[in-house]
Amino acid sequence: MSVIIALLVLSVLIFFHELGHFLAARFFGVKVEVFSIGFGKKLFTKKIGDTLWSISTIPLGGYVKMKGQDDSDPTKVSYDSDSYTTKKPWQRIVILLAGPFANFFTAFVLYFAVSQIGTHLSPVFNYAKYMPATIGSFAPDSPAKEAGLDINDTIVQINHIKIKDWENIGEAIQTADHTLSLTVIRDGALMNFDFSPVIQTQKNKFGEDIQRKLIGVGPLVNQEKLHFSLLEGIQFAWNETLYASMLIFQSVEKLITGAIGADKLGGILTIVDVTAQASNIGIVALFLFTALISVNLGVLNLLPIPALDGGHIIFNLYEWIRGKAPNEAAMYYMTVTGWGILISLMLLGLYNDINRLFG
Image (cartoon, rainbow, N blue to C red):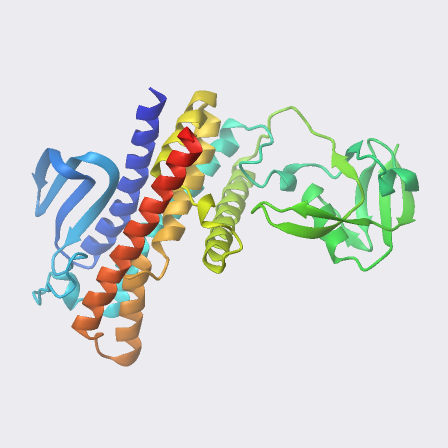
């Protein structure tokens, strides 16, 4: 049952992505010939207006086929007034951006829903931002403990930097040069402590070894659910959508530069597996993972690979700036190359999935 839920979640995210393209295309008067969820043999079709809506056998993707636009062969164009080809480059760019935007917006809505349902602190989102700057534990040989800090001390300032949450503590410590000057509240009174952090090698969220300044303290974890007002929920949803986007952009950058090994690349099996596990935990966990996957789809589709939205955006930017479309032969070969890159990445992800899940 959990696998079915995972596939349904993936299909819904793909639907919203393609719906973004569809609505933008129709807004600019482009005829949409096919709106398909899935690939392969069509299980269900219905003609509504000029568009054939379909659900196909393999629910691992989808597409919107616009008149005058064909990803498999960019030389197949139409010069009718309702064709994608005849629209201005900036209009085509808006149509292309609408798909990823729909994914980001879907993630925003899911994060907002989580904020209103209520959630426990979780590494699935930027939880340090929602922890109070109150000390709940000390590491062995903690410089902070040796300096005289105690459990339940609330840190309000580090080196004249105001501290509002636990995330601020790490940021302030890393920017300090040598000695730290901490101001804490203890039993309603302000107290000051001066000491030096230690420098240790740690793994960051991408598994890289980095040098970090540490004072050896842990947060006081509140086991109660986080609840947000309407306005706070909107801020939470914005922060988490932005945080997830930056995280995925950084991950892609590190994969490209080799900072993260290619064996860390996950594929469709990992997505289905993790989503299925989240569905077993509860609705909040499912919403959080679905939001993360939605942002992932949005970011990956913006990559400047010719077969993706990002690659088409580059082509249209070129036409907008130069005043003429790119050479058709060059577009064709770049698109074929883009499909080759995508298929290779999908196969690599599948290979890694099999090793991870069954190896």
